[in-house]
Amino acid sequence: MNILILGGGGREHALAWAAKQNPKCDRLIVAPGNAGIAALAECADIDVLDGLAVTQFAEENAIDFVIIGPEAPLAAGVADALRAAGILTFGPSAAAARLEASKSFTKEICDACGAPTAGWARFTDAAAALAHVRQTGAPIVVKADGLAAGKGVVVAMTLPEAEAAITNMFGGSLGSAGAEVVIEEFMRGEEASFFVLSDGTDVLAIGTAQDHKRVGDGDTGPNTGGMGAYSPAPVLTDAIAEQALTRIVKPTIAEMARRGTPFQGVLYAGLMIDKGQARLVEYNVRFGDPETQVLMMRLGAQALDLLLACAEGRLAGMRVNWAADHALTVVMAAKGYPGPYVKGTAIRNLDSLPEDSQAMTFHAGTALCDGKLIATGGRVLNVTARAASLAEAQARAYAMVDRIDWPEGFCRRDIGWRAL
Ligand code: AMP
Ligand code: GLY
Image (cartoon, rainbow, N blue to C red; front, top):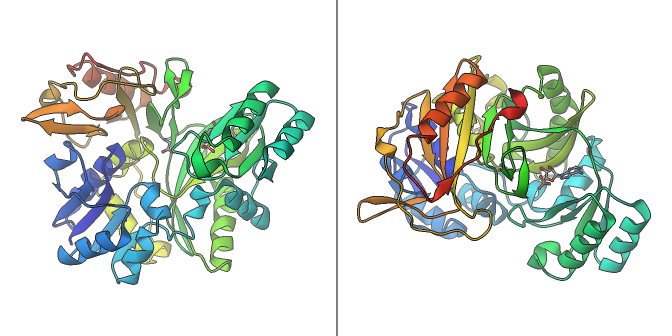
């Protein structure tokens, strides 16, 4: 079968790597892709936010299955356009993607189906929001309602921080994403990510992971898109996973179906786990980045069968073949990230690293320039390893990191610490 994957980061490299191992995969195209992806698939330069352009490209290239990586094309309705043209697609409709695109929508769904989550209130003007936080006090969480590329959440430990966040968001710092603001109760506990496929009716849990959002060792410094991840997440025990499925994920899927907007794709539930209870922090309607890199490392070729079953409405008959192993990925980023960083610096010696079912360097932001590999983004490489224990996976990943010759790059040295 001919497969098209939309996106060009480490997540899409991992999805392409897994799909490519499955004998069902004949031709594989990734749009836009990157230098690492180009080593195992064709890369195509199309506007992935333009549903008509993507559909036309898929038709011209006899694509049988489209996998949508990032949230932006989902929110823009690219899955709707593809399905309207009869093309098999993995990823939710724009209506169902509101579970990520609107924080207040998710909160309404939780309330409607009784899913445990933080208490919340919605505001459309600064004065009322300020009055609310002055009454409740800190810690408190201030969120822009819309998609804000990870910048829309402020966990305010003090009242002045909460007030500043409200003033900034209503002041337009996040554009239209901040026109509406959700203010939430601060939840204590340990966070973990739970990945569940849904075909609209049935669900199948496909893995757990934890990521490291802060840029510095010991979880210090500013927030990032994620500096590393590992799977499984020990805090998300089988009992908690079962509870999260029963109380949070399944009721959400049922409520979406009841509203006539069934959710098809991967529901990535960010959970806060405290005293044996899981509450929902947020949903994403796509795979996590860099969590996908560790999930795909563990699932391998079967990932394609699972995504196909999901898109075709056959999840009820599917199961995951789990190996009792661990995977860990270390993100290498350009020095300066998440602030301003230099682009175009040369990365050397990647060729000498192992690439097999136990070790893989996924590319997040690279390009080839005159035959040389250069860094083009903030997060650049995801050095990923798999082993019988998490400690071993960590040692392998850092041994690979240490062989990469990229003086302008850096990484955290403690990925996995919480679980070790
Ligand atoms: P989100 O983009 O909604 O995942 O929020 C980003 C991060 O903010 C989460 O990963 C949590 O660490 C934190 N966060 C969000 N909501 C809450 C909450 N209600 N209580 C505590 N921390 C939160
Ligand atoms: N790693 C966090 C995310 O993909 O949203």
